[in-house]
Image 1 (cartoon, helix red, strand yellow):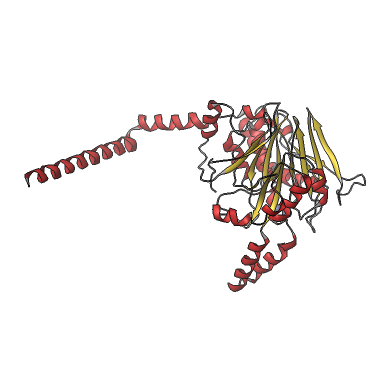
Image 2 (tube, helix red, strand yellow):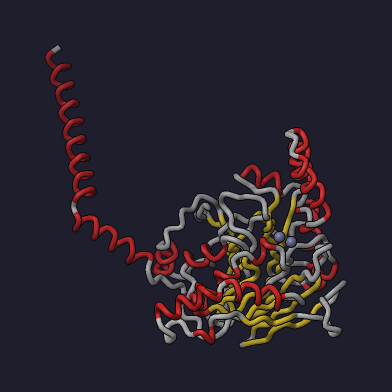
Amino acid sequence: MGRVMTYKKWVIGVALAILVATLATLGVLAFSTSVQNGLMRRHFARTIGVERTDLMSTDALRVAICGSASPMPDASRAQSCAVVCAAGKYWIVDAGPGSWDRIARWGIPHRLIGGVFITHFHSDHIGALGEFNMQSWALGRPEQLAVYGGPGIEKVVAGFNDAYALDRTYRTAHHGPKLMPPSTGPMRAITIAATDGGPLRGEASTTVLEVDGMKVTAVAVDHHPVEPAYGFRFDFAGRSVVFSGDTTKTRGLAIVAKGADLLVHSAQAQDLVEIMEAEAARAGQERMRSIFADIRTYQSKPADVAAVASEAGVRAIVMTHLNPPLPNWLAERVFRRGTEAAGSAWRATACSSPCRPAKPTSSTARSRIDAPRLKARRRAPAFTSRGAPFEARRWAGRTSRG
Ligand SMILES: [Zn+2]
Ligand SMILES: [Zn+2]
């Protein structure tokens, strides 16, 4: 009996000691300015000025996905965006809403933005264009930002330039013209057109840009009634990546993607969209039901993506522009149904976004990429072509929400 009492007293004593220590720690954190400042300093030291210059090497092609959602609300993904690191710069393919935030938190050196390629002018592909321009300007981009797209890109760019005109005057007035030069503030549109001046159509493709060993090719895709609608192929350092944009199964894309290392392709699981359509009807959401019905013929099914990849003989595919949104691994698995049938020369990955940039090549780089504190929960694919062969990996990485 006496020993039990002693034991109880001991346990209570230890619990009280832990409680007092916890309260004391919380008290210090809540009221000590110097401790608070020390912790904040540590936090800022790990986040401010972090630059992944290692991604900008001139001997590798790197790809990361900065937005893989469709226009459907998605808690963990930004909308259409990919970043290609090549020729010492980074290049953006589509600037969907929320995507600048991903790029900024990865620590990609903003002044090194080479240009933006817009596949088509749906809002989920252009919504963050103004932010890409304004932020890279404020952070030291030395020239006007070049924005490439089909006929109509002049109108889109002029509109964003107009919408941000007052913002630019405020910033120049506030920080001075040396830091915020008015001459490099507005974007510059570069139109990609067929020889007749109209959009590329059918299976047409054309070289858009050749710079420092990097070649970019545009190809017409089918996103009817949207026109122009393009996909893009990047070749650099003996490696290649192709972006489909939004498209149904398109032969022209398969031709341009021939032998590519990686195909990043939009995908919509039609069987799941049909379930959504039925549920919208059951809930009396006629407008929603009607939209789900209309988009049936607008995108590629995962099995179509697999078929294009097989036809083109690409080494790896990543499905993006995911509709419906995929909240967990089971949904991703359901989404990939049917892709196995088309072949096994590649691996299909439903992209979790934001995908982390290419695998760091040193432990220093690894700690740096973790520094932006991406609150990550999900596996994310990232791709690098440094060394052979080109690899498509899934990491137990972390991706941020929101
Ligand atoms: Zn679209
Ligand atoms: Zn889209």
